Structure formats: C-alpha cells, structure tokens
Amino acid sequence: MRKHFFLGLAANYQRDERIAHTFKIGHTEDLKDLKRYLLRRYGGEKAILTKNGRSALTLALKAYFDKGDKILVNGFTCYAVYEAIKAAGLTPVFVDISLEDLNFENTNLEKEITNSSPKGIIIQNTLGHPVDIATIEQLAKEHHLVIIEDLAHCAGIKYPDGREAGTVGAATVLSFGKDKSIDTISGGAAVLRYPYKNIIEAPKRHPKASDHLRARFYPTFGAICRALSYIHLSGVIMRLLVKIHWVEKSADNKLDLTRRLSKFEAKLALMQLKGLSRVGEKPLRDFYFVNNRDKVLKELAAAGFYFGGFWYEKPVSPERYYKKVHFPEEKCQNAVYASSHIVNLPKYYTRRQLAPARKIIEKYQEGTK
Ligand SMILES: *Cc1c(COP(=O)(O)O)cnc(C)c1O
Image (tube, rainbow, N blue to C red; front, side, top):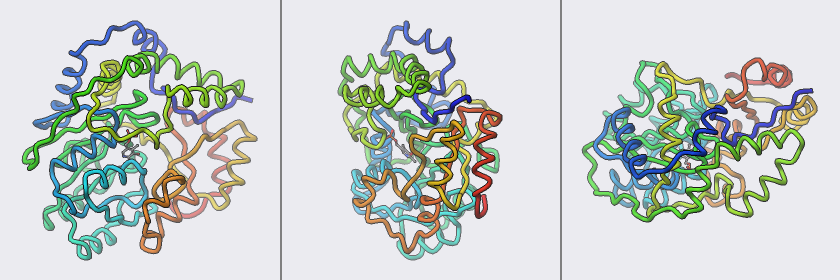
C-alpha cells in the first residue's frame, strides 16, 4: 500500500531546484531582488522583509492604524494573526464565517461593521479559497475601512473578478512559513501602498549563521524527512529537528520586528513566487466537513493517509493557544462547527493520489461545501 503523509516540509520544490539551491551563494542582492519583485507584482511603494508572516503583519498594521483601533478578522484563523493584531496594539473583532468558503459571511460582516465601527479588515482567503472581493471593497469604501490582504494561504490565486490576490488592499502581507503557499520554512514580507500614515522601520538585525544554513538546506532536508516518514522515522526526526531548533512548530515561530530575512530564504521565496502560475493557483487545501472526524482519521490512516495536523482544529489555532484568545464562540458558531468537523487535503498530492482518501471522507461527509 502506498502511504501518504501530510507532512508539508519543502513539498513545493522539485528535485533539481533542491540540489541547485544547496550549492548557491547568498548575496545581499537576493533581498533587493525579492523586494523589487514584490513591488512590481503587487504594486506598492515599500517592501519590508521579516523573520516571519506575523512580524510582517504587525508592521503593516502599525503603518495604517492607531492604538486601540478595531480590526475585522476572519473567525477561523491562525493564532499568528491574533498575535500580530495584539502586538500592533489593536483590537480584533472576529467575524463568523460562511461554511461555503470559510471566509467572512456578508450579513455577519455588515452586522459587525455597524456594531463595532472598525477601522480595518484583514482578508485571508482561507485555505486559498477567494473572498467575494467586490462586495468587501464596496463595504470598505462605504465605511472607510482599510483593507489588508494576508496571502499566507493564497499567494497566486485570483479573485472572482479576475484580479490577483494581493493587488487590492492598502497593504499585502506574505508568510514564507512551513506549509504556507510560499514555503521557505520561515520568513515574511509586507508590501505597503500610499497613503500609510505611520513610518515603519524595516528590520535591521542580521540573521544568525544557523538561520542561513537552515534555509540553504531546507529543500534537501525537508525532502529527506518526507522520505523517512515512509519508514515511520519522521516523528523521531521531527522531534530532533525541533530540539535543535532547526524546525519550529509553526505556531511557536516568535514574533520579531527587528530580524531581517535570510538571503537564502529570499532566494527560495523569489523562486516560488516566480513559479506561481499567472492564471491562478489551485487552493492550498480542499476541505470537507465530516460527522465523525476521529473515525474518519482512523480509517484514513488504515488506508495509508496520515495527518500530522489540520487547519484548523479550533476557530483560532492551535489548540494550545486558543484559551488566550477569549474567542466569542456564541457569535461565531460556523467557525466552531468548522473547526470540529473539518478535514482538509493539501495540494502537494495529486487528485488521483488522493482519490482513495476522498472516497473515505465522502462516506462521512456532511453539510455544504
Ligand atoms: C501562518 C499564518 C500567518 C503568519 O504566519 P507566520 O508563521 O508568522 O509566518 C498569517 N496569516 C495566516 C492566515 C496564517 O495561516
């Protein structure tokens, strides 16, 4: 039986890219190239490269908002987003999602705008499924909301009206973290467009030699880890890598507004950005709702499909940080439902490879999609 491990480590790289990258030399020019590319692709006046996505999001938020401002945020999201909003001194207002696409539900959105008079909105295009951008833009115009686009899940996708995600809002934020749509293991970027009102200082502190080393070997090491998972060694290896700080659990990647991106991370990010098709990428993950998830996961494992974890097991994930958020569960019941019923399949396996998994999932599938 062919086994499939949903272990996203360096899954975006081809073999020749892995090998070539390992022998490249890092230049300061790599950082400049990436910035130039981001400004051209997304349009903007300032590009900032950071240690991770949440640091980029924090800086972007600080550029447009003042302390205490309320920001609308998807009720089904990653702790990194919450952390960035708090670090920027702002107040998150969670909006319940639609179960169709895991994005804002329009009625809820309008209700929250009336109730809390927010100053901005973060669009995340959950798991790579695009929002109805025209409606959101209209609401933003009427209520003077600043739009921030978070591309952690959705670099390369198109909105229904044909525009590329990342070209609409005041600022665009990318994460280059493990399992994200651009994956260099860690890193982030913010593209700012005028008029931003607060001047932001770009990170100045250089990465450590070990950070460069990690990004140099990530494509190769990642592939080795994935291969070892087939003889059930990846658990041991992953624990070892976490122990020597080669890999951080995604949610634990520390917010740091002062550390620069590594040159090797910049090289990898640029390579992947250039590779994103111009006509729109597939969603990062296809999702399903099932009525007995534990049982489904057991059956999937018996058929050779192993999950490390999925997005998201709580409305704001991971579970170990959820309590800190004081999430308004009564108000966001779709998000609560989604987080306890969702199963999602990543795009680094083909539809054909995933067909047996889908068959199992469909037996237990419920609700709409
Ligand atoms: C992961 C993630 C981020 C930021 O990720 P970092 O781990 O800080 O790079 C931002 N937004 C969303 C929706 C995410 O899933």
